[in-house]
Amino acid sequence: MQEALAAALAAWKTQGLPRDPGAWLYRAAYNRLMSDLRQRGNRLRLLEGTVVDFAETEIPHDAARFSDEVADDMLRMLFIACDEAIPPESRLVFALKTLGGFSTAEIALRLFTTEGNVHKRLARARDRLRETSPELEAPPLEILAVRLPSVHEVLYLLFNEGYLSAHEEQAIRRELCDEAIRFTTLLAENPVGKRPETFALLALMHLHTARLAARQDRAGGLLLLEEQDRTLWDRNQMGIGMGYLAKASTGGSFSRYHAEAGIAAEHCLAPSFHQTRWKEIDELYSLLERLAPSPLHTLNRAIAAAESRGPESGLSILKDLAPPSWLSGSYLWDAVFSDLHRRTGNREAAGRYAEQALESAPTEAVKELLRRRLRPN
Image 1 (tube, helix red, strand yellow):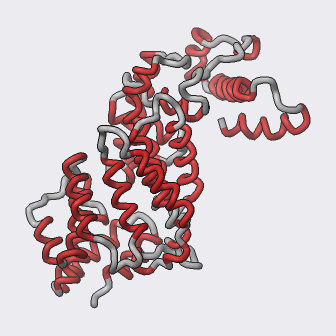
Image 2 (cartoon, rainbow, N blue to C red):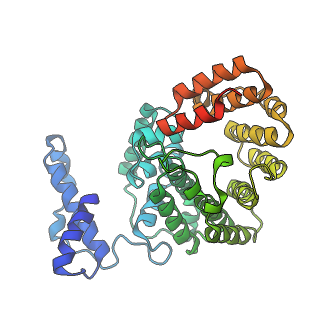
Image 3 (cartoon, helix red, strand yellow):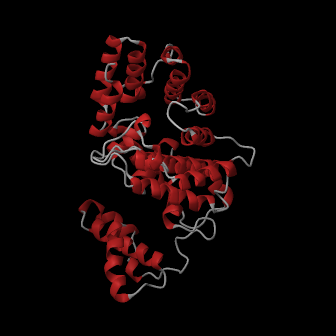
């Protein structure tokens, strides 16, 4: 697809825009793929049995296009990648890899799994698609609605990778945040996605993006929330986020995105770090735990409790929590424990957890952030 876009940039400059740019790109990408496959001897028999010369095939004007439900090609492909025929654990991996362009390492970090598991899930998704041969025409709205939660989850992870990237040289990838907002806005404007959950997700994205400019220093290093210059926060974008949050409240549903957007709103509306309403954030994390149980939410609730009631309260929340295998080796777990023990004066435990957190931190930017946060008093 990237090569097709590059070809379009060269061809359309001299030849002008084609009648159907989407069909042109689809044909160019298909021809490039077929050319590549023909060069592989182990695919030749498959090609001879199943492939028609696409160059001689007329593409209908409306081919490979959702009618009115989803107008954007990439968003349309996202719904196809979230086909319910694909095993649930493979949908996210497949969509992030094929549409988001994420590396297996980035996906593994976001989903708290190994690169080997990512490869296995990709293989399962591709096998199922070969078996089912999904149609590119528009499915009924009720089928699209079934896929909507998976689409929400992919867009959420796409945004998160932009907000705190696993990329070694880019701690924040603004372009991914902007693309996630663009997709989610398109989704919110279509009948299938015009739901409170979509509005809440969009609110969450805008409220977090409003603070991006203050999250890095001049050298590109990450800043802690208490270190950020709040005058750099984008008040206009915060207003947009609050507008979507109000829109999300019209309806009978309340999702994890509502709770997370509420938490983001509390941070945005606080005059300073110390004037933040940590009690309300603590309560929102408790609600989030009930909506979408996860030890990650419990960790965040412990942090909020530590700010509102003291570090001992945070540790008491975690005392009976045994981390699952996918989290026990994560820097997040060790960093929270190190910080809470440091604040209670238990220097030995704080140092031990800090060392483990630094060892497993994914990038140098995150390591530097942890060094500042977890340094002894």
